Image (cartoon, rainbow, N blue to C red):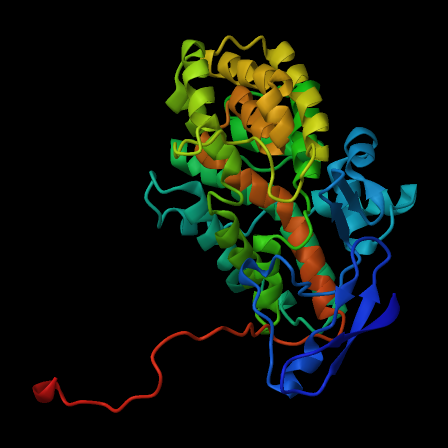
Amino acid sequence: MTEKKAILKVDGREDIALSVYSPSLGQDVVDVGPLTGSQLFTFDPGFTSTASCESKITYIDGEVGKLLHRGYSIEELASQSDYLEVCFLLLHGELPSAEEKELFVSTIKNHTMVHEQLQFFYRGFRRDAHPMAVMCGVVGALSAFYHDSTDIKNPKHREITAMRLIAKMPTIAAMCYKYAVGQPFMYPRNDLSYSENFLHMMFGTPCEESKISPTLAKAMDRIFILHADHEQNASTSTVRLAGSSGANPFACIAAGISALWGPAHGGANEAVLNMLDEIGDVSNIEKYIAKAKDKQDPFKLMGFGHRVYKNYDPRASVMRESCHEVLKELGVNDPKLELALKLEEIALSDPYFKEKKLFPNVDFYSGIILSAIGIPTSMFTVIFALSRTVGWIAHWNEMISNPYKIGRPRQLYTGATERSFIPADKR
C-alpha cells in the first residue's frame, strides 16, 4: 500500500496534509483522520465515499462488474469450487489443500447439530412469526448455549465460533421453516454434502428417506457461494460496528441478520416474488414495463440493476445458468415463473433497460430458483443470512485480529442551539 499526500485548504485555517493510500486494487483513499485535530470532519451520508476499514477479503469493481474473493473471481469459484471450499478461502485467505479441505469439511459436518435445548427455544415463538424474526432471536441466544468460546481475544475461540456458526446455520434455518409449517425438526446427516444436508433438513420427514436431486443441490450450493460475501455492505458493516464494541460474535452475527432483513438489502429476492405477484399475469407485462419507465410512477422492477454494479452483476450470469437448469429439471409449470422468464427476456433486449444497465441481478434469479424448489418467500432472506454468515465472521475475525477502534460516526448537527429550560406552567 503506497502513500502519497493531499493538501486540504480551508479558508482561515492552515493547510492540512492528508495521506493518500493506493490499494492493491481500486481507487486511492484519503486518510481524513488528521481532520479531528483541526476541528473538522467529513460529511458523507450513507458512507458512500468513506472507507470504514482496511480489508483483504473481498474486492468489487462495480463499473466493470467484477467480484473477487481473496483475488479469485466469483465466476470461477461458482463454477469450479463449492461452498465449504469458499468458506475456507474467505476465513484463511488461501484455497485449502486436499488434506486441509477434507479436515475442514469433516469438522463442519461434525458440528451441524445444535444443542437439544434449543428446540424448546423455538416453541416460545408463534407459528406464524416471520422466520427472520425467529432467526434473529435464536442466533442472538447462541452465546447462552455456547458460552465456552466467546473470548474474542482468544484465536482458538474465534476459530471454534466460526466453525460452529457455519455448521449450525443451515440447521437453525431449516428449524425456522419446520417450526412454521408444523413439521418435526430433522436432524442433520453427516453423509450428505452441505447443500444436500440443508435440503434434507428443509424437506425431509421422519417417514421416509430423503431423495435429493443433484441439480437442486448444485443450485443451492451456488446460491450459498454467490451470497457468501459482498464487501462492506450494510449488514457486514453492522457486524463490524457491533464487533468493535467487544460484543460476543453471536450477538454480532445477530446484528448482521437484523440489518440484512431490510427490503433494501437482503429482502430483495423476496421483493422480486412480491413484484411478480403484483404484475399477476404475462398479459400485464407491457403495462408494468411502462410504469417502470415512468419517472412519476412509484412502481419499480425489483431484481433489476444494482447499487454497486453499474454494469452486469457478475453473480447473475452464474445464477441464470442454474436457474434454467433447475426449471428444466423440475419441469415447473408455474405462471409466476413464466412471467419471470418473460421479464428476463424483455430486460435483456429492450433498449431502455440496456441503456440504463438495468440487467437482472442475482436476487432476480435466486428468487426464481428458491420458489421453484418450493421454498416460501418468507425463507428467502433466512437463506441469504445462512450464506452470508461466513462473510460476516471472516470480516469480524479480520477486525478483531488487528488493531481497531470502536466505531463512532460523527454527525452534522442542525438542531436548536443552546436554550434555557422553561417550567411547564410558563410555556
